[in-house]
Length: 444
Image 1 (tube, helix red, strand yellow):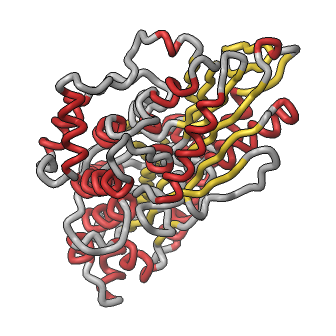
Image 2 (spheres, rainbow, N blue to C red):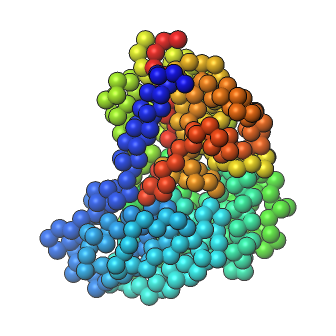
Image 3 (tube, helix red, strand yellow):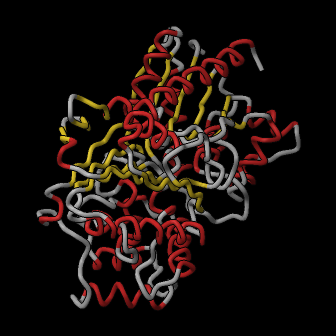
């Protein structure tokens, strides 16, 4: 590894750290929630204390503990109580007034089912003199599974797993989950009615659509039972999902079951949804840091989607072109790509992104690509992502590793682990999708 490549590696980590700082969940809450004279200020919404007897918090997602801690600090004794649901291993702080529960992600588990039941009990206690503050971050859909009867948690989990392995987008995944659930797609807001609801949303979805973030538990749902069936057919899963799942979707499409709440429903009159953090804000901070380090930064996109390895190859070709520049360049993108799993290996979309990029960059000098998830976990691993350089494939070959074989087996984790090129941050307390960071130092 050259001196320049060592510098690129250090700079990449510094730039990524700046992106994480800008996406900090606690900071985002503090920037949008405060107390005024006799009112709670939630963004541009003013809520007079005299209108409420009780204030509850429901925080769900991989960043829920950090978000809940901020709300608890801001409201103090005015906070009556509430529930926090986060991913196993993401308990990053202690809370005084709130019950914390850990649950499974990305595949729902029994602890998530138990948490959902307690959330439903809380919602049913609310009345018109109550205020419910909801904080939503990435992972909320899986952490509150609440399958609609008679569907079981195992059956719903199977559907989620099939869609994930088929490469379904988050929009498609959530459209299906909303219609086999009892909390998603505006149904949480329906259960909380007639209470006033304020939702603070940390966006982890492309386009920042409030009906997609966390499967839109407090937002009107534009998807339908018919849409859910079409998605299953598109991925040829309609014959593989549990019979009770397909039966519910077909009954709903036939008008035999009520649809999820739609735009214009009166129950949303006292519901206020606000996005308080996003991938683009993180990218802007990263670009600012890159400029301070002497790079010419450019944000390519904050809405990147597509098959991971194909998107990675395009990024690698863009970086190859950027090497013609006379000055250091930093290219940035964000979003959430998908992996169609065909192998038996271990990894995640960011590690796969880095591996595909490494193959495309093979032999190119003084270039680097870092791909990592802002939540600190990439797939079912303890890594946030990985770093690829122009000599990655060569170094791997010297260590007895075949980059192509590992990519075909979706086995990026052991590949980068052996090279010392995994990015490990631990749980970050936030989640605004993924960051792809491309650096080149000079003209080749």
